[in-house]
Image 1: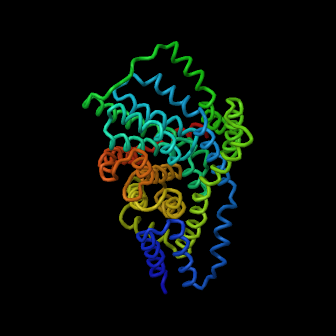
Image 2: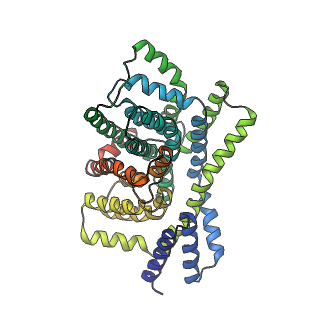
Image 3: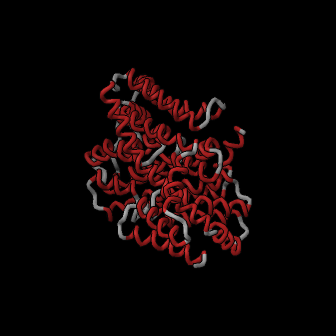
Length: 427
């Protein structure tokens, strides 16, 4: 059987299993196992590749950042971050929507994932926004859309996975994601403000500066987590993996000082972090086998050759990468999407002379966008469940956020310094 036919079978069987609602990780494993049999490779290779994919040092950052997210969302740290947002922007029109977005931007520097953002922030702000008279579909949409910032602003699990897959500096990817992540949040806040003015959504009274200062001082300890991570990387004190370890130790110490962590509940926290981590790591291992098969069957050179046959423009090449990840993100989660298709994106980037940092940021941003695009849209589904809203109205309310996010990615494509300036300055 030719490589082209094997590729069609590999991808087709995976899509069929996904349509039949087989979990993505198992779909990747089964389609890979059958294809390995077709190329006379034994099932032992599947197990070997799965284990080998997890024996990579940069991936060690993922458990640490997952633990930090669980520690910070279980205690009062989330409440302190929420108080800061209320104090500084609570007087704006549509204040709860603005707070929702700002808290997501601040919490993004702690957790590194979007799903923990949706669950943690959504559980608090969705009921509050509904009680204040905000339309339920918009409440769900703004919560899901703002949570996507969690995988753009550093630290980011997607960037760790991309860096380890494409052999790109994770620290440089973290720095490259800072400006685009803030830009996504600011654009969402502007859109929410326009709607708030149009529909006269409520706002809170302005908080005196003295009270703002007190709130800021109370919230300063948890806000030091992203500062420790980014400053440590910027100053060259530690790598992204070491930053995750130090942030986890700091979060544990913070919990002990706040008397939120004791021996009994610390075991529960570790168990919750392990359960949160299990599925992404299983997805990483199975998608690595799938990606290895794509490379073995020469998919990256086939796809990059096709792209190069239609364009020699860097911008058009990046738009093709954006389109590929946008379609893929509608069906599978960001982690397997990055692992499977990052080699294809890197092959196109190398051929066209595109910066590895820029292509990494575009891939990670588009994979994040997939968290709110139907039919998969994991964050949108989670927020809709939290808000008790039917999925169709939630999708309608999310469409403007998807469009604005897409335009932001195009802006990053057309203006490379948005993601390359900080890494260049530090270098």
